[in-house]
Length: 350
Image 1: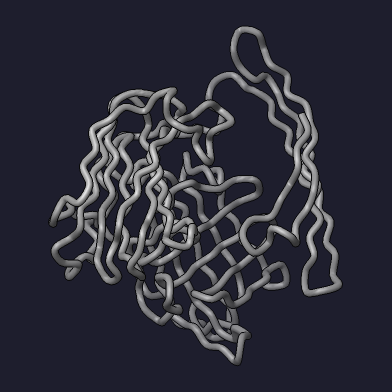
Image 2: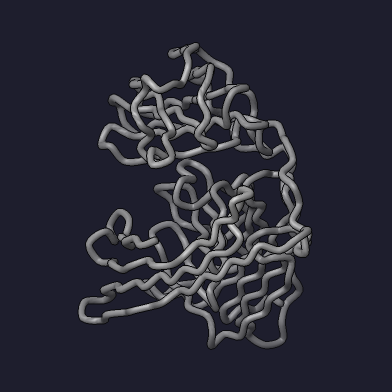
């Protein structure tokens, strides 16, 4: 197989590269092994050109040597109350071959329904996609065509749900599709909340204990992955300060070290403060929720359920001079094993 690497969004014209490799497919019905090489070239900070090669080797093994936990069917995620308000769209329909190819999964033959809807600025809306025929998947686009949110199983079981507070009046677009490529009957409902007050409490909040003071400044990055957790593979990690790269983002901070990358931020339009944030969602699509996304070497999560607390945050201009953050991330489902972490930079806390 061969392919092309292309940057997303603002990086589209700055990142280029190639993918090449081979798959060995066993005729009894599975991929026996795969070898891939991803070569990426990026332009950073003007004249700096960075070329990286990422080698992937996959070998099928009998049994479950990493003790990866099977997904558990759940109800709506923690802190997601049932929507209360007026139903402005209700569609009982069927996803089938008459529908257009999906904008993201079309190469697999997946179909989608496109549903236009009008939103009012400052109003909260819930989009619910339920089906017993396929694994529901939702995307929401704003008036300018930008992707505002995506969801796979946020509605419980294999149903999808997006909660969104509109930032502007206009014509929005919903794409209802199937994550597993199947077809069949579904129900789509859009509810305009009668009130958004009291929407922030989390039913099962993650618990944090303030760390003890340190006699000298601490700079480190520590991760603890529970058995069966995907990103950290059930291991514990500790990295020294010289391996850490910390930078300010528009909403918070980004930390990179040894193939791991952490993005932590306040809800869109805000910046991190020294306080506890519950109900965090995947950073890129968190919208009005706090943003959190921990990825490992070649591993990431489509859905994030998490929380974090900012103990210390001091800056000089765009430079972070002191930082202490503890976080918990659960990938894909709110009941999956946690990945916990501690970020310290010139911190007065252990």
